[in-house]
Length: 79
Image 1 (spheres, rainbow, N blue to C red):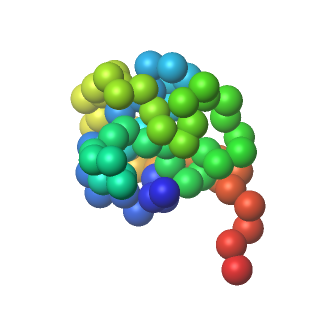
Image 2 (image 1 turned 90 degrees about the horizontal axis):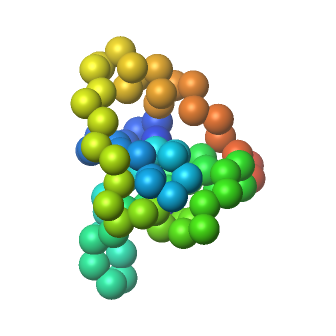
């Protein structure tokens, strides 16, 4: 899982839960996935994957930077 704070690619919204998601390679091919920060703070029936037809958002740089900086991190502390 990738961090929303450092992700450089496209960020969309999962149609199942409305939370941000990103497209990345998995062992079975590219799939939309939830970010690491969403580990325990959201309920999505597909988590850790996201809906495979997510909503495309036309982010402006300010709103995307704000989302990345303020998105809550519910992942357990990493050592």
